[in-house]
Image 1 (cartoon, helix red, strand yellow):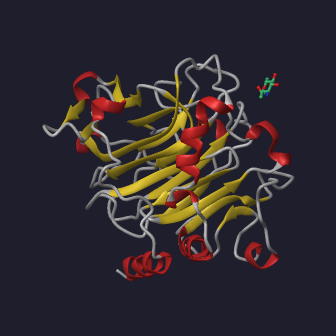
Image 2 (image 1 turned 30 degrees about the vertical axis):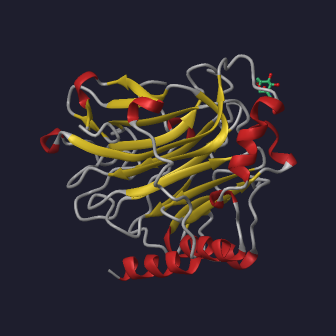
Length: 331
Ligand SMILES: *[C@@H]1O[C@H](CO)[C@@H](O)[C@H](O)[C@H]1NC(C)=O
């Protein structure tokens, strides 16, 4: 409860609506098609929402019909309820199907939960196959994500990336020269999947899926795909091809970071971020160029990157970045 009030306060302080949903959402068939899972993808009659199911036979997923070079990608997601240890729900951008060794990726991954415990969500950034340098961050969710849908959005521009939960920016990755090719640069598709991540999802794989509780169902609605559509991924679009779209994206509310939104982001991260690579000196000997580390913030984190103050009830086993975000599709 306290969590919810605080989140409401953070939202109020940001005082913006990231995107006026009306008019910008699309129907499922306008932008997406089923990727796998046969009967486990269920369309709602209105054509604007779908359910993705995971049962003991299969998970399911969908993919955007086009590749995009930069843009704003968003879905309202309601997560499966009850006991969901080992269940992974992901909403992400990737081109791993085309560039096996040099893929780019931007993720939201929901990592199952034990009954009665809070869900955690992870964000990640890969560029040009930088899988040996995972850029994970994990957060608690300040609401029950199984009770109602919340909006999760990824803004990807040539120079920065912002992850949003509802109208709160929760992570900003500003491109630095030192990041080099680690910054996602090639066109990507948008994916949503549900799959069995027993091997690592919940407390580093300690808690496996129990199919007694299946099917696990995630609902996706308010789908938004805005960006520069790319016809042939092997032929990256020219600046001219994307000029109009870039202007539309960069002038939208969701692309503007003002002091209020930064303050809201800081508060969110202070209260809900449980792990960041920026302070993980156990896994990484040098810091990441895009991390804006401060000594006073560092104080709040253990050497292995976990927050001293945001809940971790017990130290979760760390896992390798390789295992991250691999749905059955890309495995
Ligand atoms: C990406 O990685 C590949 C293989 O390591 C390398 O040849 C290439 O120059 C890198 N950069 C880009 C932009 O492709």
